[in-house]
Amino acid sequence: MPTHRILGAIGLAALAACVSEPDPPVVETVFTVTPPTWFEDGWSRYRVSADGRRAIFGARFGDRLLDLERGVADSGGLAGGLDEVLVLTFDHAGALVRRGVLGSDTAWFAEGSGAPKRLAIPINVRPLWSPDGRNLAWYRPGDRELAVGPIAEPQRYVLDGPVTGISWSPDGIAVFALALEADGSSELIRVRLGADSAEVLVRGLDAPSRFNSVGVAPDGGSVYLALASDTVPDNEARHRPGADRDTDIYRFDIANRRLRVVVEGPGDDFYPQVVGGLFYWTHNEMLDDVVVVAASGGESRVVVPGVEIPSWSPDGRQLAYTFGGWRIADWALNLDAAVVDVDSNATPVSEPKPIVTGYHEDFTPAWSPDGQWIVYHSHRSSGPVADYGSEASTDDLYLRRPDAPMAEEIRLTDFGWEVGVADWSPDGRRLVFDSWERGRPGLSKPWIARIDPTSGRTISIERLPIPSAIAGTLFLSWSPRVDEIAFIAEGEGTRQALWLIDPDGRHARKLVEFESSTYGGVDWTPDGERLVYAALMDGRMQLFEVARTGGTPRQLTHDPHSLLHPQVSPDGRWIAATRIRRSMQLRRLDRLP
Image (cartoon, rainbow, N blue to C red):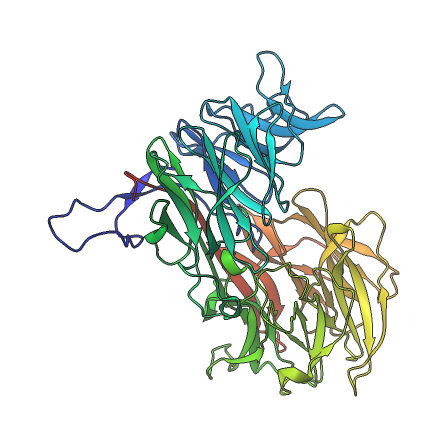
């Protein structure tokens, strides 16, 4: 795709008001990726090669190699002689280095003249070569150790917290690193080659908790950092859906210890790099809307902008959703749920009001068939936490009367780990949901919870048996008419399938296989005869319909954006869905800010 220039797309706070000052730096969008994924690519970022000709885009389905000169993805020779490529990076000269599999060996490999050259680098680290290629720095994500020095035997340093990003100084005599402190703030560290210890340059930085980079000015006197603010992070503010906490780029002057913002604006600006005297960074825009589509198909119409994951009340007069947005500095901590009254045409007729709030992530509730209960996924914590994975948070289903105060919520499960959205049986006495298995991240298994509909007390929770060939489930939906459950089964790569099964695990049958790039969702029509699901078509997620008895699916939408999480209205007239718009851009300034 061609490079184009955008003037005024971001704020440049360093710009003086005086007309005699030089023209502001020109912002160029060098490359744009629009992945059809929900939240999975929120941390995707670009790494530019030393010669500025190529870049690596770290994405959900593996790293992509990009040709920046031609503006296209470069897949030619990507395997580099390996059986499987797992991770890509560049060496000091811009050559590809691959972590991958060759025969029975999984290791880092450099490009060789005849065959891949195995490197003596620990397999689970993120390596970075010095500008002259003589030394190496590496760290393990989530670990406090930073290695700096000769490739064969670097010196090890233990920092105050896990390392989240590194960069060499242009002269190759020092490494800058960001490390996450226990309170959720970050510290900037400098390690000089051969030094006995690491030097802390500044503490209390409001940086993201993972996948950082440090851009270093050519003279080594200042660095560029992605921060949500220029103060110590406020953990209470992390949980506020409306807080202005998208990341901007700051310049930190090492000599006087001063921070000043140099790139700011809507959306996350992060992963700064200085390459060949030019300034690069990643800009993310993750926009969601709840839309409706006529049940017969057609164009989507926005009902509530800036929100996601819709759910209808049993009488169809309310629509609930999740709001807050995806901020990489506070990942999911700021998500809450709200509800709005709608008329028979699915048009809002009231102001939105919160329905599920509190510390940490809250998802959209599902009403019981009689409207007496709501159930929802939450990472509830008793107080403000600094990070998604905080030990002070939970990961379970909660139950509550719709109009009851939050203090009366009932914790339904106590074993969850990435619990999914729950759905009710027609009798309102059972719930079906899925959750990861401990020790097997990414593979969800389905469960059925029995509750007392009077008290909300849990009677039992048991696994729903599914065919052994199914790796995991992604979404489940109980038929509104009969005792039958639909679920999306996870397959290899982007393959998924829609299945039906009885609540006791019998009569499992596959309806349809399809391609999908994310958690697309599934729901029944009110008569229980058809199912609506999301699948990948022409690079975007779209809505499809298939009969309960099987047959050829029918595509309902041809939206220019991706549609997920279909929910059919109780009267069968409308399908509410999440419409996602994703833009992950590599941006560049024509000179340093």
